[in-house]
Image 1 (spheres, rainbow, N blue to C red):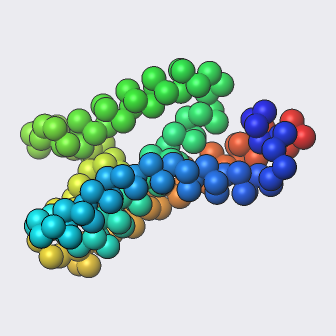
Image 2: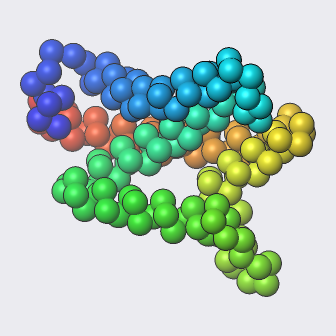
Length: 163
């Protein structure tokens, strides 16, 4: 917050610059995909599809991290909590291990996780059925937008109090 209040930029410009900076961290991985495609490797999806998936994952990460850092005053605590939540929810979503379909409550929780919806969309994209199952990606984008709007609103209230 101290950086925002002393910087000669507006609040929205600062948040936009933060998002652009965070998304630029994915450029090395994307450039590697471009090089592999250029050298003739089969990388699975098109470069545009990878760019879209990287953007959606990056935006989800940005909005989630921004929300935690806005709500929790100590950056170390926010970082540790965020990592724990992401690892736990990614494991539940089936990133590393698939859970059985015996527990209705757990299955319902898993279905609402954005990581599960993103993985489902990638599976549909791989099969060529992405447009028929576009709800999954729309859900992740909408979930990320809600987190982003909430965190920007909370951050703006803190910003206005300081200015």
